Length: 155
Figure 1 (cartoon, rainbow, N blue to C red):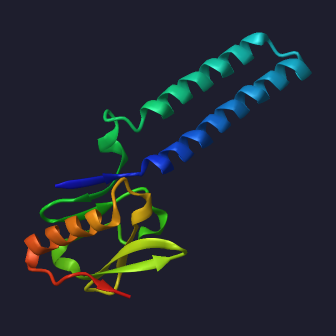
Figure 2 (figure 1 turned 90 degrees about the horizontal axis):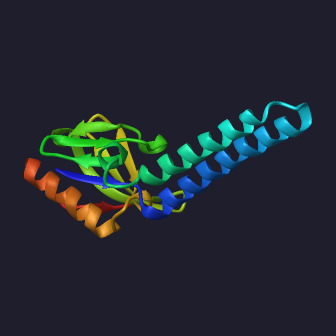
Figure 3 (figure 1 turned 60 degrees about the horizontal axis):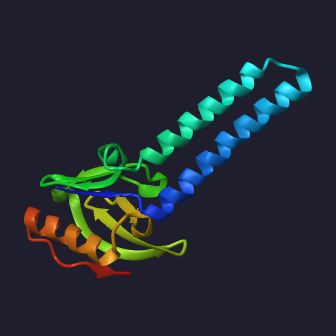
């Protein structure tokens, strides 16, 4: 079984967005206390909540949460894709895969698994914590093991 998570650069951008949102909550609470005269406990709760969110977001990508943050998983029977809006088919069996091609979609290198029924699964390799050749090699190894798959095509 192989698993792939988000790349560290993408996780850093997500963490930055979470920190900005937590800071916005604290700023809104400070304005509420200042403008409306709300109790200072409101600001204290907002600061504690922001700190908890920041710590949780910072620890989420560590090895403790890796099983929950897996984006692509290959096993002996098939594959599963999570957290990608444009993935198409989220899971499938290796026997359903007709072929695999590389493509550039919206300026991003992608691997497209074309299924026998005409549907596709698209994985932008740039968002994964691996190199495109390593991902493609692992994908081909799983397909070969499943049913003597022919090598990756290009389009």
